[in-house]
Image (cartoon, rainbow, N blue to C red; front, side, top):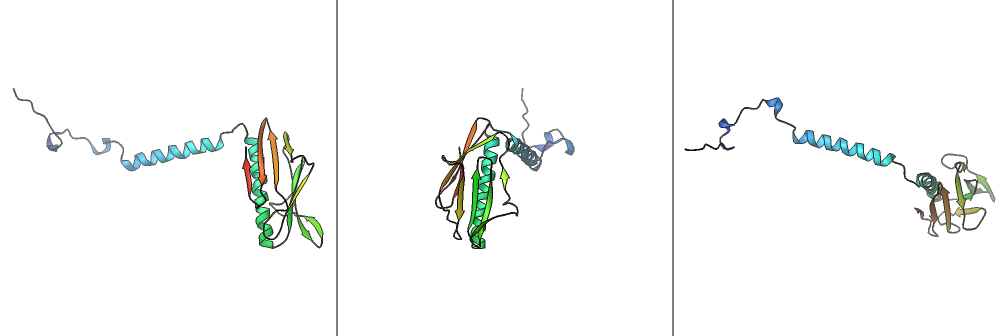
Length: 164
């Protein structure tokens, strides 16, 4: 009794499979994996964390301070940011006086309802950037919202960072 074993070397012995029933190609699988990756990234990006409100406020403030520093360098003039428990704003020095900046993104902003701010023991902080981008002083701004606290650190070198 002999058993016959068919192998891939003898394709004429394999059953014929219609072309449209052969499964997915590698390209099709890669496209599906890419779409799943995009969808999961979108879910992760929109998921709220417990410090989302405080972090959002801190990152917006940090980005605007960094933009002011860069603007002071580009305009070659002294510019400042002031921060109070009620909000923050931006100014430029002209003719010996501080003048509020009115153009976006340098308009004054009030903190959102439920946000509290601590300014290293001060009631108000003003940091001026000279034409080289160096600040007049370092500062730490502690932003609290919904039991989450985030700190915006402004270093003496002009670097602005958001930390927990």
